[in-house]
Image 1 (cartoon, rainbow, N blue to C red):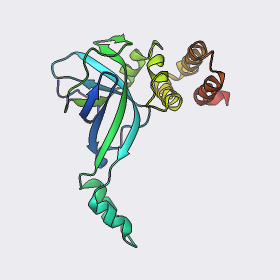
Image 2: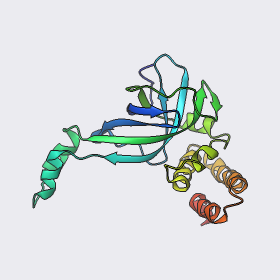
Image 3: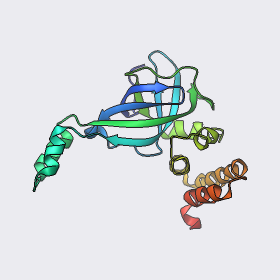
Length: 204
């Protein structure tokens, strides 16, 4: 399954494990992905989508960038050429939070990770809505040591709320906060920080 209609492809898998994966892309293709975004990786001829959250985006340099930084003046045309025409590498790190088998969410790590060069796509609003009907993926994020878990989960929840009709957004964030209160009842400073991050704008 190489192409999905109407869903932006943000890169291809560089390396992967059952807990997460990295994908590579060019800096000129960096308009869509953002911190906390829901993405999906699909192996060829596999109907199951591995769902993950972007927790880091790193733009690597190259020898020309190092030379340009040392220049006194860099004109706009040079910067545009460097960003749009040269293949400046970008690496996107993703934590796995579950799978979608057709339209059925699975809130567990996949039995197999994606393979090198498998395509990575953004999830559309319908897929985000379906996957976030249940909050069982919270544990995978909160227990991950390698990610800024509070900020990541808050960013993902804000995106998940935005994927819903306006009338559902406040209720969704309220229910998410209630679930977090259950999971983090023994860590009140962490809970309070997370609740502040996801508080609806109308309640601030």
